[in-house]
Image (cartoon, rainbow, N blue to C red; front, side):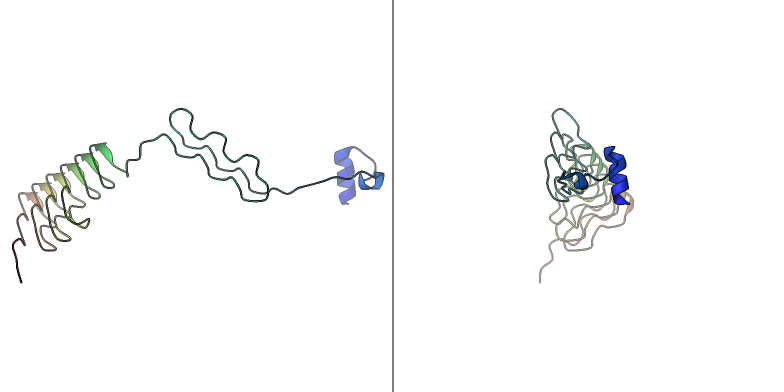
Amino acid sequence: MPYLLAAALLGTAYPAAARGLSMTMSVSIGNGNGNGNGNIGIGNGNSNGNYNTGSGNGNGNGNGNGAPQTGGNIGAFNTGTGNVGAFNSGTGNVGAFNGNNNSSSTSGNYNVGAFNGNFNTGAYNGNNNVGAFNGNLNGGSYNGNGNIGAVNGNLNGNGNRR
């Protein structure tokens, strides 16, 4: 049966091997896929995934070039991850001037509004505030969190000694 298929493809009445011809075949599976995608600008993602031998080579190259790396931030002058607005740091802050100048990455996160979760020392301070001027200048741990409104949860847990 395979000879009939080969004969049909080659346009002959009998197989190539029977006519004394040999054929060299190589297997190359899964090479050169997913290259050169999602690029922005000029001259990005070119000439990737070419001339591979074997299987699974030259895949996933030259993708996602030319775009600024924002850490998922939207707006101006944001650092951290997933912030929306301006002058935010930390993680998941929305608004302006939230989550800045904290001594721990566990402080100043997920605030909505303005001037929330800033200048905290210690851990887990100034998180999840909504409004303005909430959860700032706290020391120790777990201070100035979950406030709604204005000027709440500030200046807690500072100056404590053993």
